[in-house]
Each structure stands twice: as structure tokens, then as C-alpha cells.
Image 1 (spheres, rainbow, N blue to C red):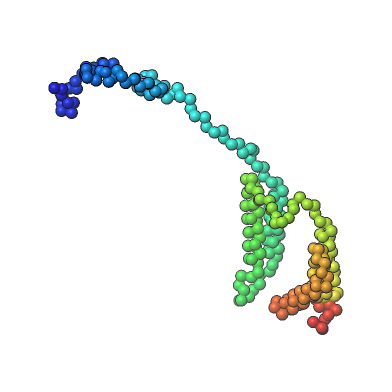
Image 2: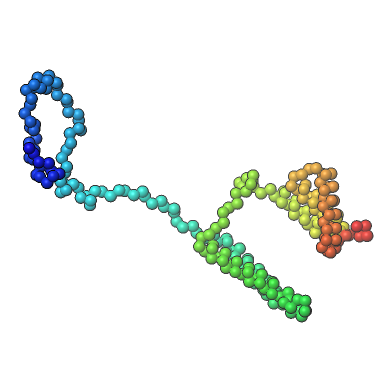
Length: 236
């Protein structure tokens, strides 16, 4: 009898490889001889475990090649044209502060502060905005270009339309005191519509007259500001 390993005994010695643990049964000798041997499948044999010394060391394994870093190119240069905007804001802020210091102090119980602090505050805010804007430009900040909406940015400037609009504003500035706002404003609105390509002359004239009258009475009644009546003085 053999002892079992789980009961404290020693495990019986195993026969060497190639030998069976028991002699073949005489009754089954013919059956075993008649069964052809099963061919060995490639890769089916189990190789012995390699000793620790035969395994490649961790340092011998080549490291994994990392993906190359993407080069974003040189850092963007600051747009020097934006410094002109910063200088303009600083100049306007300085002029507002200087002009505010010339305002006399109005003594009134209803307005103890006076009109001087508000323009000074606006001038200081303009200077602060100019300084912050300059720092942002120096760090490479730039606004995104306006893509436009249904506008072909590659098309040239329509100078004809620009000149017609400028002419309409100049005519209004020259005739507003002589003919009055209603007439000069009508010419302004009608001329602007014509410059922008609208060719409904009669309809545009009626709309221009209506807009001129509405703005005239809105300023006169709502804002208490009398626009020049011109030749229509006493009629309006």
C-alpha cells in the first residue's frame, strides 16, 4: 500500500519517463497493437519551463518607441498693429481726464459730487483697458478674424457704394440747417437706400419721409430736443 501525501506520508517514487507504472495487461496487448499511434500535433508538446537565469533581463528588452512629439512651430509673434489700438485708448483716456480737470466744481445741494468724477473715472478705466490690452498683445494674444456671414472676404471693396454713402451724409450735413431735418433726413435715408442697391424709388421716398417725421417728433416731444425745421418752420 502506498501512503497519500495529504495524510503526512511521503509520496511514492514515480517511474522514469517512458515507462508505465504497471506492466501491460496480456488481454489488452492485441487491442493496443491494432490501434495506430496518434500523430503528434505541431506545437502540442509542452516545453520545460526555462530557468530564471535563461530568461532575458529587463534591461535587455528594448524600450517601446514613444510617438514623436508634435511640433507646433515657433511661438506666434505679437501683432504690432494692435499696439496702435492700445495707444489710441490710452490717448483718449488721458484726454478725458485732462478735460475733466477743467470742469469747475458745481456747488449744489442736489448734486454734492458734481460732474467731474464721472469723466475722470471713465478716463481711468480707458487707461486700465489699454494697459491690459497691451499686456495681452505682448503675450501673443490675438483676436480671431471675422469670418463674416454670406460675405466673400476675397472680393474687392465696392468704392462706388462707399462714395455714394459718404455723399449722402455730406449732403445731410450741408442742408440740415437750411432745409431742416425733415428734408435733409429724407435725402439721407433715400440716398442711403439707393447707394445700397435698392431701386424702388417711390416706396423708398415714402419710407424716408416717414422716418424723418418720426425722428423729428421723437426728439422734439420725447427728448425735448428741437431738430432744425428749416423752411418748414411753423408748419411742423
